[in-house]
Amino acid sequence: MHFEVIGQITNIETIAAGRGIRTLSEIRERYGPGRWRKLKGVATVRLATGHIRRAEVHSYEAHGVGKRGFKIKPFFG
Image 1 (cartoon, rainbow, N blue to C red):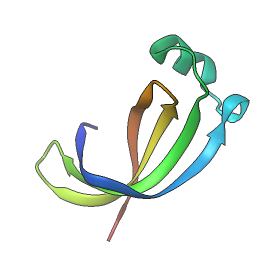
Image 2 (image 1 turned 120 degrees about the horizontal axis):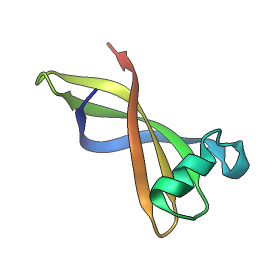
Image 3 (image 1 turned 180 degrees about the vertical axis):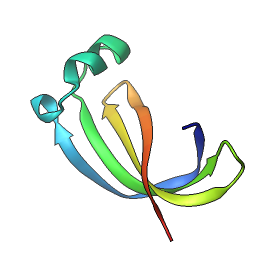
Image 4 (image 1 turned 45 degrees about the vertical axis):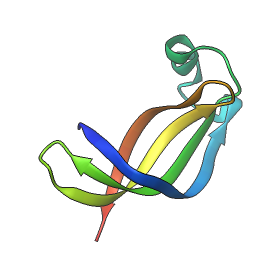
């Protein structure tokens, strides 16, 4: 699903870090080495259809690389 994050991501929590990330080898191949963490937060997103919704957003982050691999999960309200 294609989407765009509008505004800031709030309520950010770390779900997993380092070897706790199931797809760590794939992330390192795609984005390079780093101390990777999987994060989740809540943001307002614009869907490809033009609808604007609040959703749970998951991403990966490493120091020096930044946030990568955004995904949206359940919608709120």
